Length: 217
Image (cartoon, rainbow, N blue to C red; front, side, top):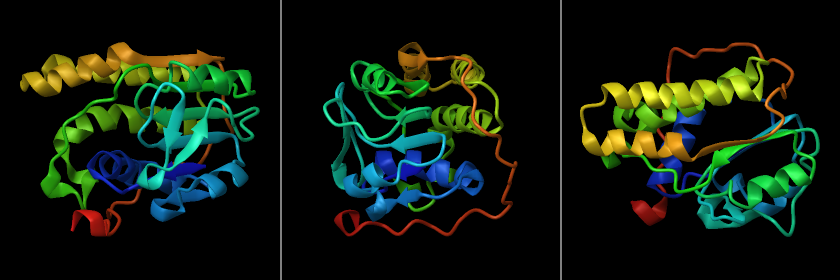
């Protein structure tokens, strides 16, 4: 399952990178935009991996328009799944709660997830080179999981790529974002967890531009 809100610049940036580089390999359900709602998320948690983009807190994870779709007091079926939340702070309480509810592995962040977004590229966020310094390692982490390799391998690669990008980054603000995210990334549960491999699919042509939400028009 993919849960990808696109209602503001941060969610459009992170979801856009996944739409471009991960979604072609994924299987339904793909909850993009207004489909990323609590009732659909709770009833469609099928498959062996859940990837979510959204604003978060220590105990909650939000979908489109900041609707809470996960919280520590009400967790849908995550048994036997790898869960990756591209969100702020969920590793503090929600990540452990997901493991306690039966998820075999969780990857997320214990503090804010921070990166620089080019607002002029809001409709084509996959072309935002500044954002991809952070989102590239994250999407590579997801693709390694989809390759059938372990959660530990995917997580380790993400950390190494964040660190490598920081070492060559000349902009001090972007560099500090990379280092901050690398320090706050968390892997919980079984580092040896794997899912059924998906075929490698690469689309040379990017998807069409994302429609700008009315609230940002």
